[in-house]
Structures are given as C-alpha cells and as structure tokens.
Length: 527
Image (tube, rainbow, N blue to C red; front, top):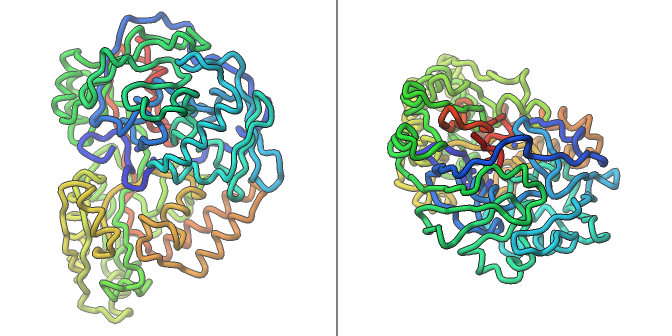
C-alpha cells in the first residue's frame, strides 16, 4: 500500500495497501502445490468495472489499490498467493521458508514448467531480475521491495532473499496484495517501456492491446502458456473504467458488467436492486494527529490533550452515521481480525465516550477553555470531509475548535500535509500487520504518517524489542504492547473500522473476502 492509496474499492474514495493469518504456520517448506482452478467450465466473456485506471501495466510502477490490483492479478501471478481466507498458498513458488533463526534469510522453491506470456521460462534468475526491476523502478510499492537487501538465484529453481532486518511478514508481502511478488518476464524487464501498452506476466491472462483503449477499457485474453488451463475461466476478460459510482451501479443492474466496487452510500440501493454486496472489514478511519510536538497547536504536545480528543468523540454515533451496518466502532490503529498482528481486544474501546473526562484532562493540561487546531480533509480520502465534520462537532462540545481545510483531491492535500502546515488530517488506513505499520506510521523516519518525525522513547524501545524478537510465538504480545502504547499516546483519534464493499451479479461466483484478503482475486471469478 502506498501511503496515499489507503483504502480499497470504495467508489468515490481513494481506491489500495494486512490481520493475523497464521504467518508462522504457513511459512514452512513442503507446502503442496495446488491448482487454483477446479472443475469450472470456461465462459466466453466477463466485463467488470474499476473506478480508476491503473497507473501502469508494470507492477513495479503501479500502486496496490483495489483497482490496480485487479488488473495486475489477471496478468501477473505472484510468488505466493493470498487466499480469500487470508492463508498463504502456492503461486509461482510451491514452498518457502526462513533458513536462519533471525528471520533475515528467506528461500522460495519455484514451480517447474511455468512460462511467461512472452514464452520465456520461469527461473530463479528471472525472479531475481524482476525484484531488481522493482527496486530500481522506485514506484509506489518500493516501500515493500526495499525490505529486501539482496535477491539471488541459489539454483535454477531456488531464490534466496536476504532481508534488511528480521521480517516476519515477508511471505505476505510477496503475495498479490503488495505487487512486489508479481513477477515480470524477461522481455518486460529488458524493455520496461513496453509495459505501457502490454503485459508480460505468468498469470492466467494477458492484455490484448488491439482490444484495449487506455483509461477506458482493458481487454485480457488467456495466456497460452499458463500452466493450469483449468484455472482460466473466461475467453475474454474486459475491465472497464467507470469513475461514477451511480453509473457503475446502473451498468450492473442492466447486465453490462458483472462486478464493481461499492460505496457505503449506495449499498442499500444495490441490495434492493438484487445485487450481491460483498463486504469485509478492512480499514480503520481516524483523525491522524501529526503535530504531536505542538509546532502548530501547542496544546497537542500534551499527551492529556490528545487523550481528551479521544474521549470527546462518540464513535458509535459517527460510525453508524458514516458507514451504517458496514462499520464497527474502535479506537485502535488496527481492526478486529489482526489479533496476532497488533490488534489488542483487551484494549479496544479504551476511550469510552466521556465528554466530562475530556474536559477534566483539558483543564489539567492548562486548556480549560479548549484550543484551536487545523486539520485537512478531502472527500476522496476515506470520506475525510464527512469524518472531519463529525469529529469536529463532538470536539466543539468540549471547547475544542477544529478548523477544517478541505481539498478537492488527495494530490492537493499532499503539499500542506507533508509541508507541515496541518496539525493532522482525516481519512482511512488499510489495516496492516504491525511490523509494516511501524515503518509507515510509527517510526521517527516513517515519513508520510509521521511528517513531524515525532518520537516517543517508550514506543521506540517497544519497537526495537519487537524487531529483535525472533521467536514468532512471542511476537503477538510484542505487537500488542506497541498498540497499547500508541493508544495511550493518543497519536491518532480513530473512530473505528469500515468495510471494503464490492457489488456483483448473483450468477458471479468466486468473489470472496476476509480482513486480510479484502480485495477479491479476479482470477477466481466464474459463472
């Protein structure tokens, strides 16, 4: 997930960018190869919709939004498949394991007999070359591939990844969710510019340029070299770009398309129209407080003030108003389903709605009459404007004035956000394993979600202890300790989780979701 592409598949919001999935149990050698197909008859064609076109047809230059991921999944099979229930299953690799006790060396055994759509064979060296291509491209998913210090071919079918540090989540990172495991063929790596108008993967399908108009529709046809023909369910797979959610809904109702991303505002209507609403918890919504040292709003430097802001909001009412049945109140920087990766059930609802306590904390910190802060918001980043207005209304009841600066696009918001002109912003964040979230939101050098480079000594100590822990059975407790400290610090003001929503016609099968795998895999779609 690129930092500015949090949130998948909700039309009208930024579309990409991780819950306990039993990583320790799945990252073992000897996982049996399995077919992803099954006895499903091949249909002539299917047409689906995405709300935005992919940035590129090159995984190295794409963002892992829900829309982009759908396009990438069709053409590029990943090293490891993320199943709909969140487990890791064979992809281009049939088995994988750590080969050392420090979790810094990771080996994968590749499937034999695999060819890319250019006819080239899959070898360990092609995987190494593709990973190097990801690193040099420095695209939106570089944050993930840069966890790999070096990649090398041990033999023709064994790849070794030397990691930057102990990394318990590398197997998950190599799935389709993060794109860095979506391997590009030799011709594509040798001529990356060709991936502007074609694909070069080892997946079930490949782009047909003659039937494609960029930014409008993309037509995929079967990869003639794919190793498991039973997993190819369509002779033609068309992806249309339909930005307007109502237009997409109308196309679903009329039978022009069979699948599209959904939205909270249209879910009831979709159900009433006889469509299937596929939903799973996936993201947490929050006011991200960045000005934790009080550079812009001195009051925010006091931990008691940040805690007061958390006590002052009525999460149940806000979640019900914004998400209806598709949201759950909560005050952690994670969601249910990530119990082994940073969600602590015992600490959820830590900040019960208590305006009186909020006022007491503000008075104790020297702000009995409240204070003023400025937050940024845009409607296309996690329904940010509505979220900001709801939170600001509750804060006003305890004397805190939130000046909301609204922006038309995420791009417009980026400048003042990273320019340290805002005390915070509102939006959503895809749930991540704590290991990944630390690097994106908690560490001093995390960047986007810590622009003021705030550091807390206790939090840093807990992070370093977790990084040093190589006994995976002890990691859940280490991640939970970090979560509790983040909640206590009040670095964020979460309101709860919201679901990823996708609409499909009743005859379409294979649209399956879970909190980890919250983007459906289109290669599993069938009628």
